[in-house]
Image 1 (cartoon, rainbow, N blue to C red):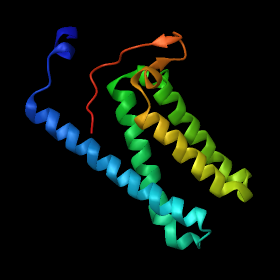
Image 2 (image 1 turned 120 degrees about the vertical axis):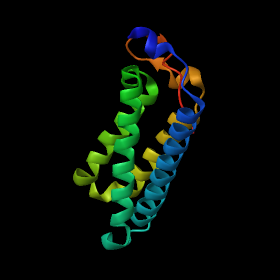
Image 3 (image 1 turned 30 degrees about the vertical axis):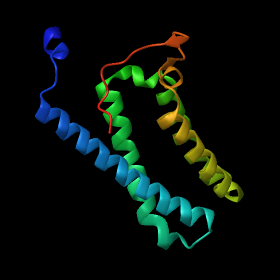
Image 4 (image 1 turned 90 degrees about the vertical axis):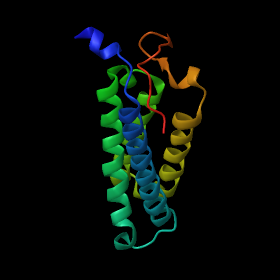
Length: 139
């Protein structure tokens, strides 16, 4: 069974996974932009709630995808910083006067997680060094 995990992914499966993950990321970005704009510009909740739901649902699906693909994502900075973003979202309830600042900070964390150097994103807080995970489906 261990040999099966090391076999290369078929071209068809690779493209299905890549397109699926890219589509999910696109939905996530649309949700973040729509809800983030609503929050930053202090618009009525009904105008951006659906975007918020899209952002949350797609974010949970993206996190689940990463954890299922390789549990080590949870101890790498890319996973730790993503979990920090989720915790910061929880502060929306307690710190209502800082919603805009929280959204901006969460977006900045997202840029670091998505576009930071691999040595930063793959750094393990447990091992205190860069650890390689399974081959990623980039998208």
